[in-house]
Image (tube, rainbow, N blue to C red; front, side, top):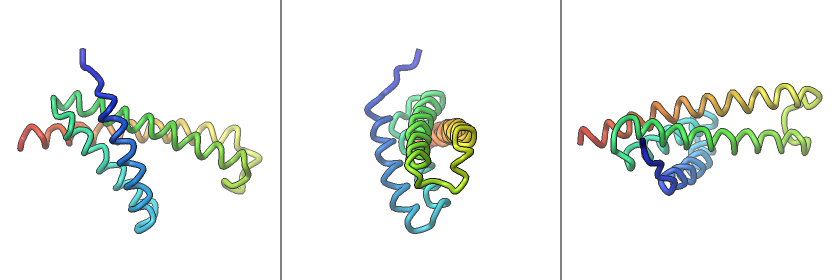
Amino acid sequence: MMEVHWKKVRKGLLLSLLLWLILGELAGDLGGIIGFILATLFVGYRVGESYKSGALHGALVGVVGGIIGGSVIGILYILGLGSTAQALWPVTGIVEAILIIILYGVIGAISGAVGSIIKKSV
């Protein structure tokens, strides 16, 4: 059974947030996505044990990041700072949060696996 390196997952989350803020400010949503991919590549590279371990750690960064992002979106809707479709928030907010978690998990797993493969090949 693989051991989860939570310290590397936390560092990946922090790096993901920082890159999302910096690149998102420079290039919008695409910059935020690129920042997230770079962060999960870094986590996979740092773990570097196998592609499965890289995928696991990248997926953890993605899922936890998706939960945090979904929570922020939900809070913004509740505070009235979100989309104009606030009357539909219970449906759209939950669906959007679930989609974010799944999407970030899949992208994180792929990027983490690629990061581990890069580490193995270097």
